[in-house]
Image: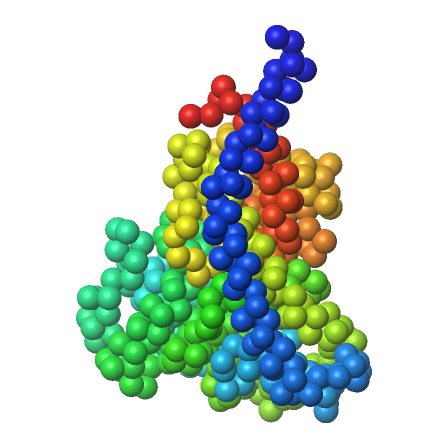
Length: 423
């Protein structure tokens, strides 16, 4: 058999594998699709309650004082997220930026910050002061940091909460998503139970949730179960794949305002910042978000089904409860992981000609390999994948505007891997 015939055989085999996986997850796809309606109902109710009109799509210039579009956008997000208040800003450059504004806004020198979900996502390590120096981390401002290690199965060590909260603690950090960890994401009900327990142990302690990748995956968001403050990115779930940039904070009005005072300045807070006449994209992105999240979840089930059938460990398992849109696949070696990223990139709508190679990335501890040929640079609500080049060489796939794109990308990936090389 010549090279072309071998490639054709591999491609046919890959198509068969993906088609079989799609058939296996059909009931799950139907379940995720059914969840779109209640999510959209929540968005439409918020739009109606705040009397959203086309005049809210324009923004004022300069300082942004009295910007009606911004004010309505904030109130709509607060309703959708079950929060007292929200601040949705294009000036947040990422989810990490929104999280940092929240932490610096609430915490003061001498305060204690406790992560109860183990080590946070890589990009927060320099914010906290676990890596790097001289850039104004929380540690350099006298914030004391501790963390409660996760159990061996990746769940929160709830029996250790009392001991961990013995010292006075100003804020508990809960990371909803798995991030770059091999663990299940936290269900909103679990977050509610953790918040309740924290408040029992230290009534004055605030509970902050990193909500990135989690919006619309479940019927409720963390503020509805007691979280004092949350933050997230608009180029993830809540932006519906069309928000050009930005992030949000939501929760208690006092804590949202404090976060805004770090984004702008004390005394300005949430009253400043223009929307550059881009509010329509943010409102429309929120309108699209339930549908886009459902497609991303179907894509995640498909990725899990394809690779688990080939013997790879996946997290979460096919059909397991989900609270974010991330699907992890453990390859155990760098070569197949890089091959899959290259195949995904080759099937991207933008930059398909690029060849992903491992490289340093600002804010990350390891070199990363990324497949992200998306219309919005860095968007993880569009289909993308990335991986830190470190043991155990886990690929993290997320997003997807429609399942057909994920199917095509998986066919390319399996063809690249070649059936003879799969174990």
